[in-house]
View 1 (cartoon, helix red, strand yellow):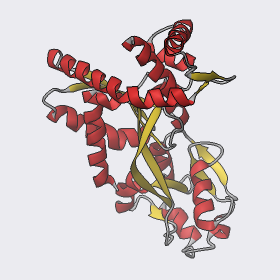
View 2 (cartoon, rainbow, N blue to C red):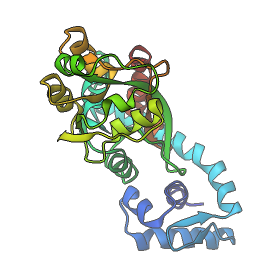
View 3 (cartoon, helix red, strand yellow):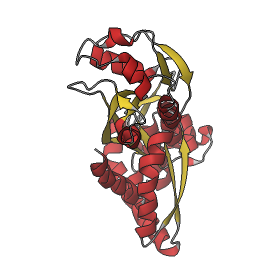
View 4 (cartoon, rainbow, N blue to C red):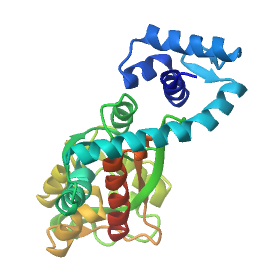
Length: 300
């Protein structure tokens, strides 16, 4: 059986789409379709059910993927290990949310690149969870950090760490508001100015729902799509904000902002480390993945 046909089959199985698999393989969609039909003729069985959106594997298709994928991944690992010996520098393409990637992931990976005897180059891009996962699935990135766990077999996710969200404001606003009760503090915050990353107030809404079991009755005064800018505006007195504790910790210590509320159970958001299934066979991706997992134990 032709290994190229098996590679195409496994890629389609993981991608759930001929079109997406074609992009990952660098082939045309008709070429992928032709290869799958050739393999189906050789086996005498259908491997996929064609649907309006993508394909679904048959029972035979699932069985073949389960048997073939580990061996194909092992062959990739062997090939890439040989390549590493010939070329000391590989490029890792990382994608994730701007603040967490800049403040957490990039410093950790820069440290790894400096320590790693084989070394690797690093390219980073920022985006929303949806854009990041779509780019990873399309082969634009090697490794992604996402606040959403992907579905399907194409991408594999593992929990990286949780971040705690805190409600903060400048000392001037805190003095005006006064101390909030541990529960039921939402009415005291009604109609106050808010600094947020989007008009929909995603951080504030998540905090209100988790802590107050309510929808926020507050107004977005400053909207800026970067949590570091949100912190700067909140420190300058623009209004209250909900921020990750790791990001605003130094400002809290300097008393540039203060906690408005300290709930018994603070809201958490989980980050996931995501790769294309099978790509951990690539040594530079596996090293970066393992290093970030280790580093995350210090972030929690």
